[in-house]
Image 1 (cartoon, one colour):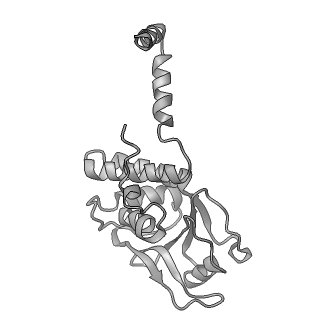
Image 2 (cartoon, one colour; image 1 turned 90 degrees about the vertical axis):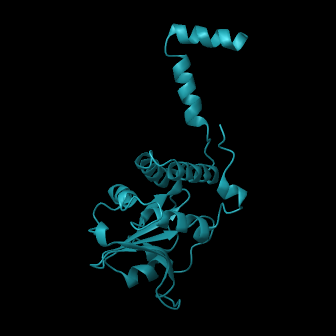
Image 3 (cartoon, one colour; image 1 turned 60 degrees about the horizontal axis):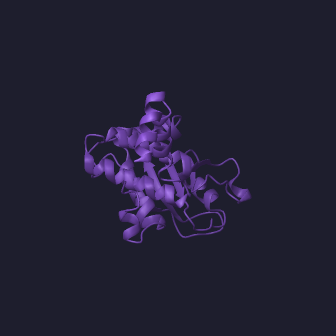
Length: 210
């Protein structure tokens, strides 16, 4: 079915947190992104993960690697993805694929924007191992949360093939990184169709025996 062909894998960009994952997610979240669908993808994200954040989508902007100063014990660093609006409502995403969490990293970002929403995004939704980060953030996983969001985005891009299929390739990349069977849903659909009624099962057995 072609799932094994993936442009991110071909270009050896599978696990690059900044150049691949942060930038791809940020581009979808950006209302001025090259996808041309305004704040549609951002709306999906807010609906799923930040419904209590009073972000004004119309004035929102998205910044990758947002610099908040020289790294000190409890200040500084670069926020992987920052979403903000004209009223300074803030969503921060700390994005981890394989990199280790830095000392007091989430605490440092929280201190810059104490009223902002802080999201800790990892492959499988792991909690922060830093005691200083307790109760400061919300966990999200690529394995389930981001895939759910991307599936929503894909539906909104159903009439724009190049965007729809690029999102599909990114979903397949995430499934590969999180050890999910790309063909699982297809296999389940085929089995369900075969077992739907006696006629379908008979037809399958006939084809199988040919």
